[in-house]
Amino acid sequence: MRARDLDLKELLSFEPDGGLLRFAGERALLFDAVALGLLRKELIETLGAAAARAVLTRFGYAHGWRTAETLRTALPWDSEDEWRWAGGRLHTLQGLVVVIAPETKSTPPPIGESIWLDSYEAEQHLMHFGRSDEAVCWSLTGFASGYLSRAHGREVLCREIRCRGKGDAVCHPVARPREEWGEDVASELAYYEPSGLEATLGALTAELKRAETRLRARRRALSATAKAGLDASGMVVSGSAMERVLDLARRVAQVDSTVLLTGESGVGKERVARFIHSESPRTGGPFVAINCGAVPEGLLESELFGHARGAFTGANQDRPGLFEAAQGGTLLLDEIGDVPPAMQVKLLRALQEREVRRVGENRSRPVNARVIAATHRDLQAEVHAARFRQDLYYRLRVVEIRVPPLRERREAILPLARNFLAEAAEKAGRKILGFTSAAAHQLLRHVWPGNVRELENAIEHAVVLTRGSRIDVEDLPVDVGLAPLAALDPGDVRRLEEVERDYILAVLRATGGNRAQAAAKLGIGAATLYRKLTKYGRDR
Image (tube, rainbow, N blue to C red; front, side, top):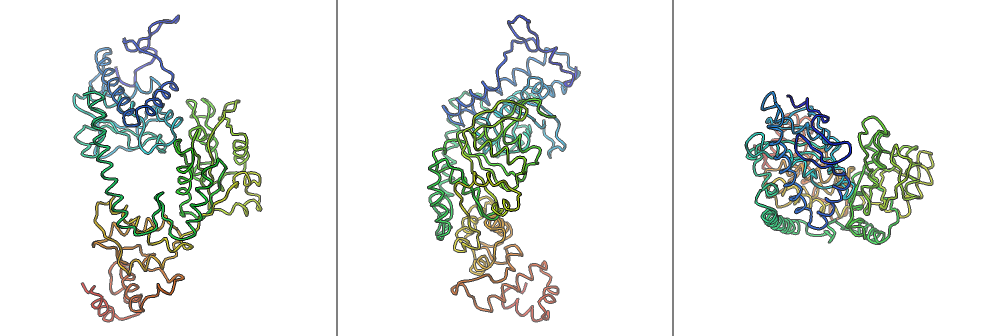
């Protein structure tokens, strides 16, 4: 027999009048997916996420190991490989996931790799907790690890490198021998140890202490690097503009009114939305965010409101939408100005009635999610142009908070840059002390059309390229290094020879170090350029 020939009708046997169910000759049970989701919820809320993951992973591992043993002798396999591949087919037959082959394989080739669609575990986690920061298919990866470990006679560990539960489009598990994963999985191995939950929790506690130690060290590094402007919330609030934003955000967080966040792309609207959520009574609930402009019009209704099985092609099972996933928490509708007119009507009804109707259903479901909307568009102008409904605009704009662009809060540039430097240096494993005075002045000169997001990317770019212990002008992206003078305070004015030095070095960097090209662009002779570089200590 081949793995693809497995047939549920042949594997599952039962009496029509009720009684024992048998799967491949062994007694089996039927469980409702929602009931398993509620069990997961109770485990997490009672034991904590780490302990709940330990329980579910060990359960999945034992289930997978037992299933591999049962199938080994229960069916006449064409080869050992067919038996080993049967685990993924069983996942589909049992309704846990839909397993398909990935378009491209990982390198080096793993023992097993697949794409999981419609994972019941990711679905239930999203329903009860919203989007996670890590993969959530714990019992499913445990099953795969147990099955493959038994089938290959060695320790095999299955990990999700993508997971729908943390916002990815699909779940993407990869299985490799334990030793091939290296040190990256040290913190995960405790979930698979067969020595019992007590030992597992002990290992997790030790790992938590190590994580807390790293967190304290990171906070000390941030404190040393970011001299001023870091609020207790973790946000940089240098200057009166951001102080007013956070003061208004704190006040509106205490009520459930709908909030509209406006401002240019990259100013940190989602960060402010998360701040409102964390300061509100809903902080214990999920924070769910969706970029409305990134979802195709035909899928947006399903993403927000969910769908019933059979509602459209590919709707293989009931699926809750993000309004339901954010139950008890906060839903951020980012880029609300990009929502098409037909969807605006349905969204308005959901906000007014506080209920949603899944695609393909004829009944409404109550929802309890606080809605925050964000946009870079001028919605009032969109209303006047008849591209955005006026009633929806006023329904969203109970309280409006405008997040100012970075050019209007220049006093925050260096505090932000220092925080980003500390974070990027830690991630890259490099010891970088700060910025040279020339680099700091250049950061202040740039107008930052991409706002905070552009600044963060520029600092990460500099951390990757710098060879010294401080970020210099030549380490910054070319467009930042060549930035013209913006409106400066009198105290920011520099000597002309410093400006000339920075500009010459930036042009040299833009030409890839080609001195002849740099001299030609500057309109000076090669000898003059060489003399100046010698003066700057850059003659080599």
